[in-house]
Amino acid sequence: MTLSTTAADQAWVRETATGIGALRGRALVDTVLAAVARRLDSELSTYAELDLATLRLPDLAADRPVDRALVRRMHHQVTDHPLFAPTVRLSHPYPGPPTQVTDVVSERRWRQHALYREVLAPRGIGAHTVALVVGPTPVLRWYQFNRDRAFDPREMDLLTRLQPALIAVHGRDCRPGAALPGGAALPGGAALTGREVEVLRGIADGLTVPATARRLGLAAGTARKHLENVHRKLGTSGPVATVMRAVELGILEVPGPRS
Image 1: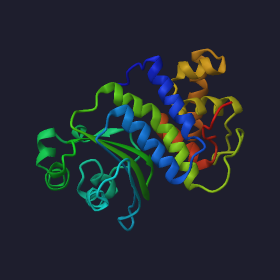
Image 2 (image 1 turned 180 degrees about the horizontal axis):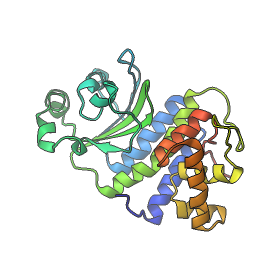
Image 3 (image 1 turned 45 degrees about the horizontal axis):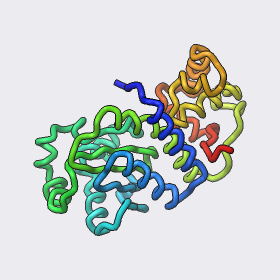
Image 4 (image 1 turned 180 degrees about the vertical axis):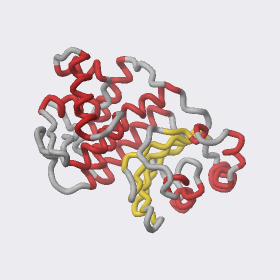
């Protein structure tokens, strides 16, 4: 269940989304790792890309000096990781919402898992892991945060609200060319209006529908109707799938520094 965030939580999501809007490549990854690690008090934060066709890792990063062989081994064993094994076997599409390993298996079973016992535990890395996927197959891109205590619902809600902005920025980083303006034709012949794109942009910034409505000077019901139109035209439901589709089509304007 999504919780109501405080004004401070919403401000953090908005500021983080704005701060990364103009970044690319390693600068983008390092900034996200640092910002989220501080907010979550993470013991180890990493970013990885996995080519599912070859199971190679074209990119890898961590938020602090660590044994790269350790991190690489950890991610090379992603095919056995409870959070990623179904995706690697192409039986579970990503991106989904941020997920803790204990959402998939019990903590007891995870502590008995070879990946935890042989790679993480001997180095004092916490058993609780949350994965934040920001790119779909065939090259899976994700952030991973580890610590010794579970991530609480408020923290998971923060990650859920930040995820669409991260998907948008990483999608732009991987896709050549500039975003198309509102009104661009969609495959089905429909088009998003300028207002619909503005509402979608608010969702990508991590705002709720009421907060997006306030930003645009609209009634909440009007903003919600615009979002329903976006879902219908893109053939999606939910913020993650909708932002992903908008990025794929080149419609979404990635958040950037505001004057």
